[in-house]
Length: 113
Image (cartoon, rainbow, N blue to C red):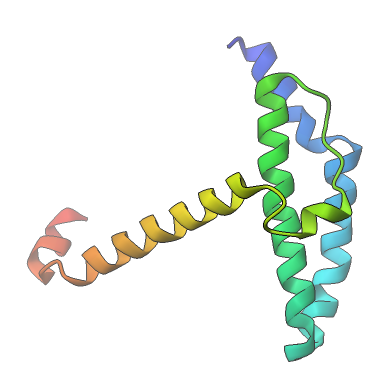
């Protein structure tokens, strides 16, 4: 991929739809935090929408498709199983790395870094 193609793909994150989602999350996330326990569903939906849109943005950029528009049905985690599977794989890998780090003897972990 040329530098120009990379920059064109990276600039897609600064187009109108991603910025609108970022602004909406920036406005609604503090409300969810202030809501305490009652704000947890709002925070979960906002987190899921951000994860889904990032997944859709990367996919559409890789395939050369137009920018995705976040729809209400994307709030359902079962609507698109691939992002949920990727999130589960990342959580499993992170948990395995953390568990392995807990069982590494101290001299080895100090020598590693």
